Image (cartoon, rainbow, N blue to C red; front, side, top):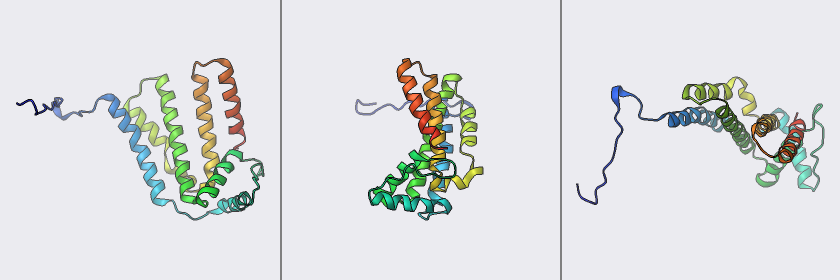
Length: 192
């Protein structure tokens, strides 16, 4: 072997076992449901308003004219944060419904990642546990909400709840944690 040649090391693979270590298997188990969910949303999402999505169009139109009707009522709720994000999409990309659905999917994936970090602080993550958690988290029994941009507010409720719970589990100074929890709690309750 000359100096310019590099020696490549391979791990022994007795009995055909996987060469991935346990951390890599956990990451792979967490990635598989996420990728399948993103592929589902990318494949089936359309830039076409559906049902309650038509209620967003007048809000975006009002925002184009300088009004921000964030506190308008929907049923018995006020969907402030979700409407602000949707109005932002309306102002910057002409309310492309598919982009809103992809953003919703990213919010849901972020909730999943934060949940896995909380689960890791509770117990050691194994690849079967992470895979089952991902399959349950991204189950497609509620497939219609994933393809309905108006549902962003409900995915934000999950996100804010997970972030609030994660902040409760952290050892932070009391004033910072209390102010963060109150603001996140207010965002969560204004969603639903």
